[in-house]
Every structure is written in structure tokens, then in C-alpha cells.
Image (cartoon, rainbow, N blue to C red; front, side):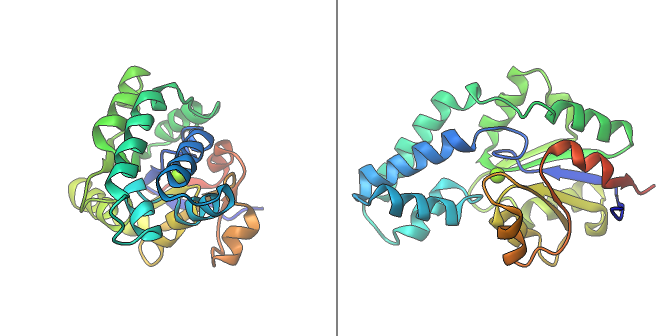
Amino acid sequence: MVNRLPCRAVVFDFDGTLADSMPFLQRIGVEMMMKHFAVSKEDATNRYVTTTGLPYEHQIKINFPDDSRNDAAIEEFEQLKIERIFEQELFPDAINVVESLKEMGLDIFVSSSTFQSTIEEYFERREIRTLFKHILGYRPGFEKGVHHFNYIHDQFNISYYDMVFVGDSLKDFERTRGICDFIALVGLFSEQDFRDAGHGDYIVHSLSEILNIVTYQG
Ligand SMILES: [Mg+2]
């Protein structure tokens, strides 16, 4: 029997959580590292995976600090991403889960490391923009994590105790620490990966399992 998690807002990561976009993003992310920095596929994959969940700009700058090739790699990645991101599908249960949570009375947010305009267009093209109370994308200085959680707190008057973040990366978990609850979605990372990182709470293997965890805190 799972303990229920009372909350008022569910905040979803986008890539790899609502959208099945990680195989695509990892492929082009690794390709750009191999092409621009002449690293092996194995090395590039490790560099990509250990920093995933962050904007690609940060993934590059963490892995290749002060490298003159950074701008070209970041620019080419973002170009490849924008050309194909709209083809990436949502997970099959994503819309049903979001609708069901809304029916419970919860506010649904998206918090993503993808640029604001890109992520909004993604949902607009699928005509599901209105399912979400607000969509928070990346811009420099306004990132998934404390910036986005503070914005939801301030603009929508939702306390941190009433927020739960659902994400698929270890960085997502790290960025909720000390702020709000976290539900880990297994995919890119295993249950053991999250446990090893110190996540002691909720882990799901599909979005639908969230419906058995969260309850509306009136
Ligand atoms: Mg993700």
C-alpha cells in the first residue's frame, strides 16, 4: 500500500517525462559532442547522460569548460532539435493522466529545460495548451528547478509543500531537494540510479501510476 501524497499542483518535466523525446535528444546531443569535440561515442554518451535534465548549453559548458567550440556545438544542437522536436510523441498515457489530475482539482504545470517558445508551440500544435495552468520553459537565468518553483509559488500562491515535481533525470531530483516532493519516472535512469542518488520516496514506471499516488489537498 502506497502512502498518498497530498498536493495542489503537479509540475511535469517535459523531455522524457511527458514526451518520449529522450532517444532523439540523446542521439543528437551525443552526435554534437563527437563532431565538435572529437570524443568517442562512449565518452560522449557518458557526458550526455550524467548531465541530462540541464539545458544543452549547460551540458556542453560543464563538460567542456571555456572551450572555443562550445557556441558552434550548442547552436547546431538547437537547430537540429527545433527541426525534429515537434515529431516527438507524448507518452501514450500522458494526456489521460494530465486530464485525470485536473479532474481531481489539481493545477498542472510544465517545467522544462527546453526554450519557452519551443515548448509552448509543441503543445499548441497538439491543441492541448489549455490543459496546463502554466508552461515554464528555459531562458538564461530562469531554469527548471528553484526558479520555476519560485515562480509557481509567487504567481499562483501555491506553497512548496503543495507542489510535486515529476521528472526522469537525476538532475530533476537534485533540483527538488529541500524544496518540494519528487516523483521519479524510470526510463533513462533506473530505480536503483535514483535510490543511489538518495531519492527515498516515490518512483513510478509509467505516468499512470501517479494517479495512485497524489491526492488533492484542498
Ligand atoms: Mg527530462
